[in-house]
Amino acid sequence: MATIKVKFRPSTVRGKAGVVCYQLCHRQENRQITTDMRIFPHWWDGERRELVVTPGNESTIFSYRKRIDADLAAVRQIIRELDSIGNEYTLSEVIERFQAPKSEIGMLDYLRKEIGILRQNGQFSTSRNYLRTLNSFSSFLDNYDIPLSVLDTETICKYEKWLWGRKVSRNSSSFYMRILRAAYNKAVHEQLVAQAFPFHEVYTGIAKTSKRAVSEKTILKLQRLDLSRSSALALSRDLFVFSYCTRGMAFVDMAYLKKENIGKGVISYCRHKTGQSLTLRIEPCMEAILRRYIPVTSKSPYVFPIITAENPDRAYLQYQTGLNYHNQKLKRLGRLIGEALPLSSYTPRHSWATAARNHNIPVAVISAGMGHTSEKTTLIYLDSLDNSVIDNANNGILKDLNSTVS
Image (tube, rainbow, N blue to C red):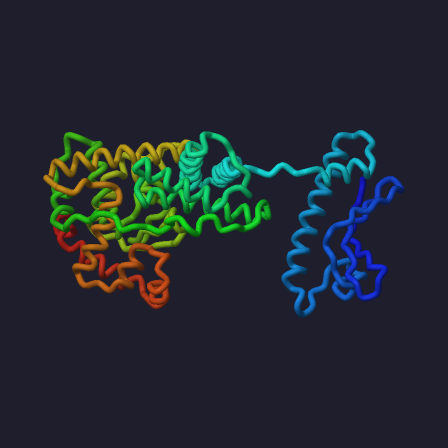
C-alpha cells in the first residue's frame, strides 16, 4: 500500500521561502508532489513534520493546514480505491488521479445530497423544507444545475424577482432564500466553494403576518361544542383546545407526544422545532382531554390517535397527513361557531400568547411558557424563572376552562 508524508523543501536561495510538498512511497518507488504553498523555514517543525504558527502568520497557516488535510484525505482515498481493485499500480497513476481536474458539485446536486443526509438522520421536516426549496430553485433554473461557484448575487437576485413575479409572498421567498443560504454556507464550511456572500442583497427576514389569535370566548365555545356525532371533528377540537391549554404546544409535538412523557401530574417533552425541553403542570381541562383518548390509544405508545406506525418514515407521513386533515377540520369548526378568523394549527399558540398578555403576564414569562429560544433578551430572564411561575400564570388563563370540567 502506498504512503504519503508532508515535507518541506527549503529554497536554495538564503532567506527565501521554500515549498510544501508531499512525498509518496510505494514498492520502493518515491515521488513528490510540489504544491504552491510557500513557507519560511521557521514556519516548519521538521521533527513533527507540521506547520508552526508564529506571530503574523496565523491566517496563512490555518488556511494551509486545512488544504493539507484535504489533499492528504484525497490522496489516501485514491490509494484505497486502487488497492481495492487488486491490480498493481504506480505512483504516477496516483499523482495523475490527484492532479486531474475535479468536477465541481452543482447547487441542485448539493441540495439533493443534504436532503438524503437529513432523512437518514430522521430530520424529516427539515428535509421536506429542503425539498420544497430544491423544487422551486430547480424550476427557476429550468432543471439545469449550476456549479456552486456560479451561485452569485446576480443569480440570487434574479431568483427573488422570479419568485415575486409568480406572486410568492415575501415570507415564502425569504424561506427559500434562508434554506439556500444555509446549504450554501455548509458547502463553504466543507471547502467546496469560496464564500462570495451571494445572499446579501435579497430579503431573508420575516415579515409580520396577519392576526392569528382568537379570543378566550372562542376557545370556550369550541370546548362546549357537542361533537358526539363526529369523532373526527371532536379530535380536532380536542387537539386545538389541548394546544391552547398547554401554552401553545405545536401539532407536531402533540402528534409525537408519548404516554411516557406524562407522569406525576406534569407533561415533559422536547420541542421538535428547537429541541428545548419543556415541563408543564397538568390542569383539569388538559386531564379531561387526556383521559378521553386512553381507550382509543390503549395499544399505542402515543397519547393521541395520529401516529400508529413504528417506522420513522411512515410515522412522519402519518403526522403530515394528520396535520393536513386537522387544518381542514379546524376550518369547519370555525364555521360552526361563527368565527370570522380561519382556524389553523397555529391559532392556539398565538391565542395563548395574546391571552397571557391580556392577563398582564410579563413577556419573559410568556416566552418561557412557549419555549422561545430566539429572543436573546428574553433568554437572559429564563434562567432565573421558576417553572411554577409559568404554571401559575397558565392556571389563571385556564380558570374558565377548568371550571367546566371540575
